[in-house]
Image: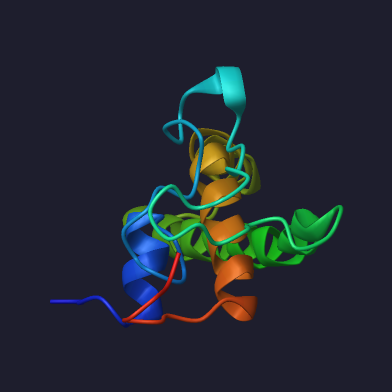
Length: 126
């Protein structure tokens, strides 16, 4: 199992990159009132999540890569499930998958971006 200290723990649980305990987002992923809004700081260790203005714009590159991965997965799934290739069916599968996973992809992209810059500290000081 993935344990604290591993970046995947922070990414999959969407927890603070430094302490792996505090919440990273203000609300749940599919709560559209605050669409994947990142907290100002960690409620547990006090890490400032916003080191500069527009810090999370870089996460758009990560979200793009995740979107491409989902598209490739849907194309492969289409080839495995159906005998004949249909562009329209494949397009529908890709659009459906991207629309349903968009909030999750956005949140995962932001936590991956944050994990590029913040590192786990087992003995953090507030």
